[in-house]
Length: 88
Image 1 (cartoon, rainbow, N blue to C red):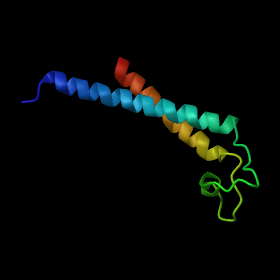
Image 2 (image 1 turned 90 degrees about the vertical axis):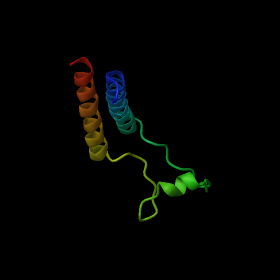
Image 3 (image 1 turned 135 degrees about the horizontal axis):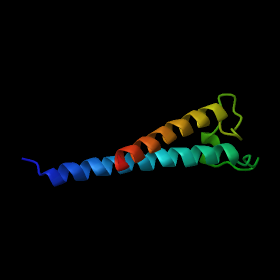
């Protein structure tokens, strides 16, 4: 038989993880919207510059705004849900 303490502990940890991931989604996506990436230097041949290339070979200088807003909204819902579960 599982002790009640273990069940409460794991559910509490799960609530805190959902809240942390939700808040991380909000912060990261809002940061991506308001602080665009610097364009890659022409002489920079790093793997990182090639990894962010579009299909036509151009690099992304801004995060897609609609996608970032949707992810930020999802993160906000997760965070508020976790707060409601934590204090409710």
